[in-house]
Image (tube, rainbow, N blue to C red; front, side, top):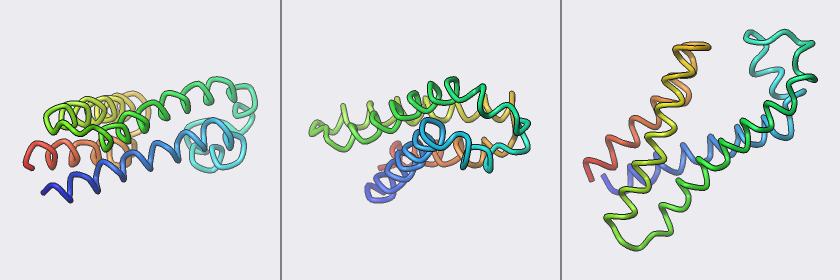
Length: 121
C-alpha cells in the first residue's frame, strides 16, 4: 500500500502542477478549452489575473504534496501528505457543489483515494 499511496500522491501533485500551468500561463488557450462550458469565451481575458491567483494556490498544494516525499520522519510524512490531500479533497468537493460535479471526479476523488491509501499503509 506504501507504493500505491506514493503513486496517488504523485498523481495528485502532477495534476495540480498542470492546473497551475493552465491557470497561470495558458488561461486564454488551454483554460478556454477546459472551462468552455463554465465560462463564456469573452470572460477569459478579463479573468486572467483571477485564474493566475487560483493557479498559484494549486501550485502550493502540489508543493506540499511533493514536500511530503522529502520528509524522513514517517509520522510527519504521513501528516503532511494527509493535510495537503485533505485540502485538495475539500477544494474538489466545494468545486463539485458550487461549479460542476466533474470537479469531484477530477480533483476530489483522486485525493480521497490518496487519503485512503495513506491511512491503510
